[in-house]
Length: 205
Length: 205
Image 1 (tube, rainbow over the protein chains, first blue to last red):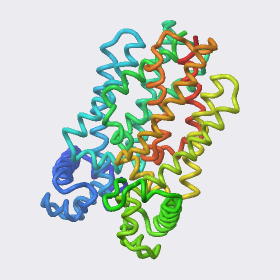
Image 2: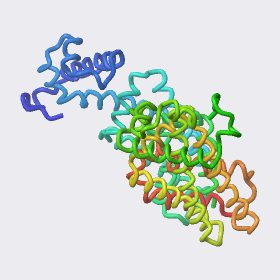
Image 3: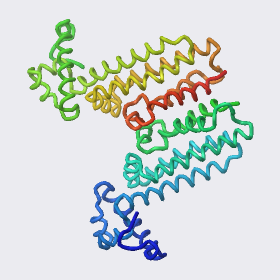
Image 4: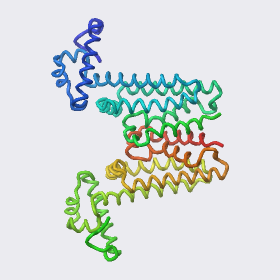
């Protein structure tokens, strides 16, 4: 989000922050009605009543606006997952809750808000930076649960931590990534339960 | 593939079998050049030099031809997977080979033969009967390996066999189904190794 016309130090006051929020809110509304792919920055500018040049002062592209919407959405999912994990005391239950809540939050957000789905699909297929960061944070959360479980003697310690976390992340990935999740709607309710049980068997000391 | 105009007993001699093969071969060629989705039975008839009515004597729809092509392709993958499994003596190695070869065969067939990919995508998204049968056969092969491993004392026996097989099949599914495999090209080489290790840890007695 470089900005050639304004120096960031001058341009980014609280008022700018408000304008950015206003653009994101209007874009979310507009994308929802007409679709992310079909909407251009010109369409957005017209709809919001700003000039195209004014929007470009705050976002360098349509994707930059989409990334902001997507980041907000992924932060919401991550917060729900962390809240679900925090309720549990023991690492095995944390792992079950993590898997269950990540699938439920993702499905709910996308079914309540079909407009977000198209953005998420673009984000996932084009590997937007926000998605890479989100996936890394989920992977880190998983690794933290594993480490805690090893320290408490609940999980085996022979497998290198990285390897164990990486393999479990691969098991979860089709249910975390919306591109793949769309093909798993049929068993999205059952899969986290069955897969968590398998993963926990693989972790038994 | 019902046939209202000819009685099957009269119509289905060896000569008919040859004509069916001829139609399938020509269709494979034609789909490959122009795409499965875009090709109609009329296009096929023109290209092969048969009348449309004549083709309909052997196949009730374009999908019926596509299913035959798809079935041939899936039989080939299944034969390769079974051959890979048969080389190994012990069930853990059979399981590793099964996972590795199913991914390799699927990827190779689709990259060598891009024309098959579009048919496989239709087959997978519309849940053609050939795909349902194939997936069930792969699941059965997996369950046979598990049963053998339990009998030989290599795998744990506490988990119900159905449950263990079902969960492992869910782990493999994103790498078996072409709709999902397209999003896993990046880690298609590493994933079977890492996931087999995880699955084998889950099976340890």
